[in-house]
Image (cartoon, rainbow, N blue to C red; front, top):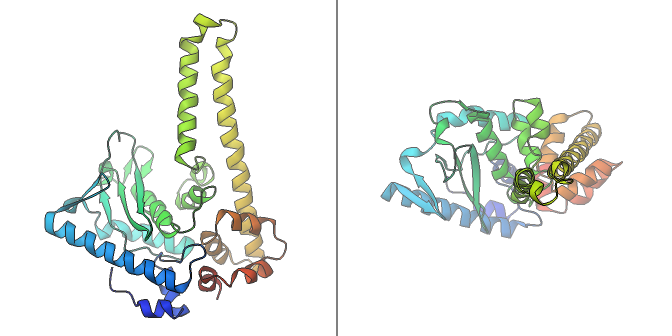
Length: 297
């Protein structure tokens, strides 16, 4: 990353701040210009330290994630993903280090983002299988890169409910755009795996203990968990689409602006936009915050 003009950030130079926003560098929730400048300075130093260590030793360990210089994702691989995020949400996050790397137990691994608070220093890794091939199983390299860049640009929002849904809008498949974000967190994945485990155990062990109950108990628990996730995702998607429609209506059908606003919004703000009858008035009340001054000013 080239040296940033932190003084212009501290002075709330909106023209310069919008240029940073277009690179996926946005204030966190409630962050003022001074705090944002301090975080950018720390991020800049962290990136410089990372690059120095990488160039000197050829590799850098970040909390168990081994980044090797020769495995760095080349710039050519980012051209299509950056173009996609620019067209969809108006940003080109071109400063994040990315590597081909397989963590342990990674047979079905596609990619993930690692963020290190408080400065949101970030790297991401994608499967070694995608080094030479653009596709592996259900994974698409360009789609994964665009998806992970969305997480990087939204890292200061603390989003849970709509985070994956927004990132999955980069997907080429309509099904994944709707249902790809059905798991909101690692806890959701754990609950689903436990339901699967209980289903298997119920089929094997329960018949020995309670033959009358065993045939359906495992399926009942598994079905209840799946139904919960499906209904929750359907509701979240409905709220997301309603918020988009409300914003687009307020901006004379400008869907690009609607997506940009949604991209910068927290979970609570997206819900407010979905329930609001006067979007412009609501957005006006948010413009005291630096994050929204940049987006709406």
